[in-house]
Length: 228
Image (cartoon, rainbow, N blue to C red; front, side):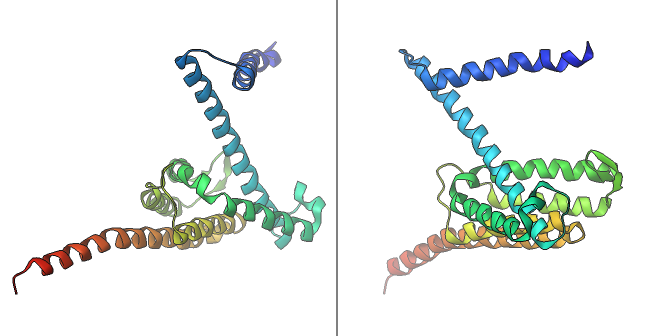
């Protein structure tokens, strides 16, 4: 009987999601409230699809790079060989780079989750979901601090914000740093420090360009208003 409990729980959820998907595709509400609800359902599916796509691409980057470099063995990527795995990693990274403007607005939220995970590992002293692998509490706290810094320097990446070139490069460096951290855990602090420095530099460049220019204009206006 216990085997059917998960089915009984998940079946209504699956039915609800199927109904919501059909409603989003074929529903034709007449009222303004109904149209708004339909658009919310569509946005929800787009968000879920984007998250799944992002996770899939990151898995392909990490798994493909690990298999190509020989640091990961016995995975499904091994069937592609080193050359095929490397090509998959490069293609996935190219897609991530092409869509950086789309996923940047969710970046800070994802990193908040990493902050929580790092704090949990600092309190437990072992890897999440695997007590057999110990984790340095000091390293976990350092990682939590780095992740917090990353959240602070990217919290302005909103839906309407247009990324500058240096910010796009910094985000892509973070992807590479995260890949390095996963493939070589002993260099996790170093790789995330470099990624944090890149994001911090992008944040400082934006702040200097935005507020420094205003101060320059203000000083220029003040000098012009002075009597000769």
